[in-house]
Amino acid sequence: MEAVTPWYVPVARGITALALAVVITFTADHSAPLGYLTLGIFAVIAGAILAASALRLAAGRATRTLTLAQGLITVLVGIVCLSLPAGGLPFFVFLLTTFASITGFLELYVGLRSRGRDRSARDWVFVGGLTALLAIAVLLVPPELRQAFIGPDSVQRELTASVVIVGALGAYWAIFGMYLVIAGLSLKWAPAEDTTASLSSEVGSR
Image 1 (tube, rainbow, N blue to C red):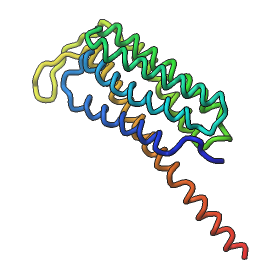
Image 2 (image 1 turned 90 degrees about the horizontal axis):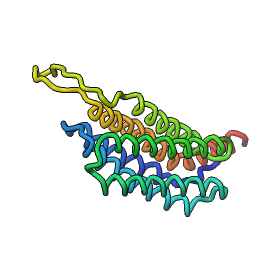
Image 3 (image 1 turned 60 degrees about the vertical axis):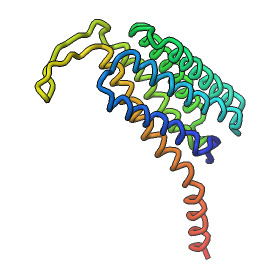
Image 4 (image 1 turned 30 degrees about the horizontal axis):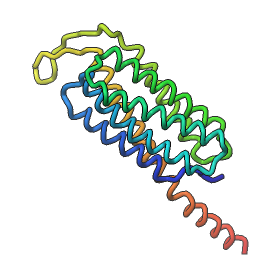
């Protein structure tokens, strides 16, 4: 069983996600504008990577079509985010959940239908499921959430829906990024490992 997706595709998506996870982690203001900016950057870059890779896939027509659709939808969401940075939290939640539910379902579906035929199928299933879970998690956050608390530095702060949602997005990218970087490097090294195993079996049979 071989992978039809080049190893650098998941690595590029993963590095993009990890970079934005770091940005959110070290930015104190988890406001909706930060969500628009980071989601827009991620969606444009990751969507373009997916769309370009779909045109080069050696997979079946359905997989190429679904991957291309996922890439184009992602780019479209990114353009909207970057064009409307002051759209407010409700519209950001709408964009984020729409993006996560549609693209998550598409990637999950491609992974499930590719099981046993493509080494990347397990990665698609995991990432698709994780993205769909992001949509559910965001929808569970009460939009009117506003709770005061005292931080470790004894400074009074406020937990809001924006803080929780943008923080969840950063956590999603951290998991998403780490998984895809590891998965991509595994794809890169797998052929060499398979060749070594084949040579060892041949030597052992002599």
